[in-house]
Image 1 (cartoon, rainbow, N blue to C red):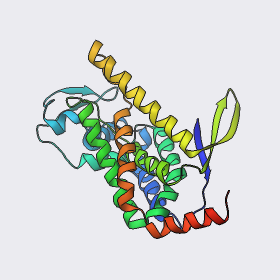
Image 2: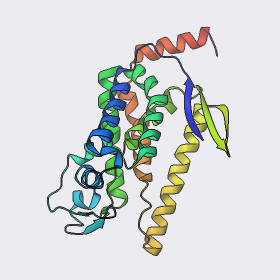
Image 3: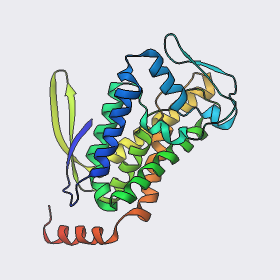
Image 4: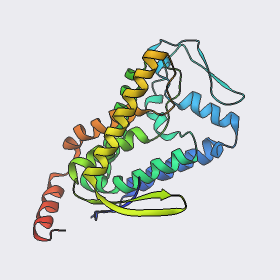
Length: 254
């Protein structure tokens, strides 16, 4: 199921969400050359992606093949900036499009509920916590973790708490026919969160038992961001905004 819009009006223009989308797209086109330049892509993933084993110092000197002709060599000195820069680097077109779609569907209402300045801090903080959890899940990993999904997961966690009954429209591609239907936000977001958790546990168990490396999907970053969003939103939300929303919903239900 892919969400593509919600029935949740906003009071403010989502300037920060739009700027974040522009910055991510600009990085993909300008910095990563749309994935069409192998050297640029490898440089972006290795230099600006988060490599857990580099941050922890547990993988110094190890080599990780990253593209057909390039490898990442883990540096001896951690680059802590990658805890933030990884949020603006993506692994492919669908990775970028999916993250930006989720950011647009859920992010405009969270920016509306916090205000633009607090939303920037909230978004980056969720991404940071997602990175920390990803490191903790496999401290010696040499796989670069990239993408806005950790921060976007935080936005989704906040949405679950603030707007659980909002209707979110989904599309499910069945062969060549797009099936569309609406679900309450709480149903989809809990389903999504459980899916990430079960996938993360399964991957972790497989890695421990058989030594099979991680799939390349940062499930634990998603989980970390989601939980961080649920926790931190209480410190960033505009209480007056929430009060107005509750009064409006009470007088104009549905």
